Length: 272
Image (cartoon, rainbow, N blue to C red):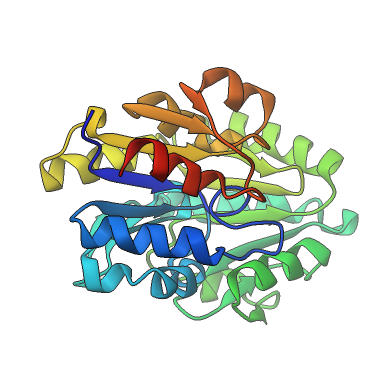
């Protein structure tokens, strides 16, 4: 198959344990873009949190794409315009905040994003700080007036804290807003609160339609539960050797781990 587009999760997939792209993988990704193929950085991170890696890979020069907020937004790196943008229902925002805030005494925080900052709605915890480090974005304390600070177009909220407490919050939000929101864990200490029906596969299908490609021409690589749908949808769904068991079971192909240049191995096998 003549694969034309490569969608890559970031943490645990494209980047190694040091959160870095190795030089051989970097060079290979630039080489396939020079040959006319497209790269999509597909992440739960906010758009700004993906930008440093996009710049390393010269996505702007080659007209490749960022899929951020787990599919809430797709950005054309060349034009800087959103090809697809799905925001949280306005009527749900206050209810989400009030539900999460009930757990404030248990060390929970709720976050959303501006183009430059992460807004902390309760009190920053160790996982809020981790989100800040991952995305290289500063945290602003918005606990006094969080609802007034939320942008007009929020793509997601992120709830951070102890996994046992987060599971309770996830269940409560899912029950309360089941027809309006998708609520799931991307990590044990992160609960993603997204518009209903939004995931990486949904948004990749929008992108493929807009650029005239098919799922059969797409390779998707990932390691986590939020990568399952895109791996299932792709012409070639690839799990990293370090992927969750359910991801490895779903994939068409298992590559090497993220610390063994697994993405480079995929490129060498299927895109050169």
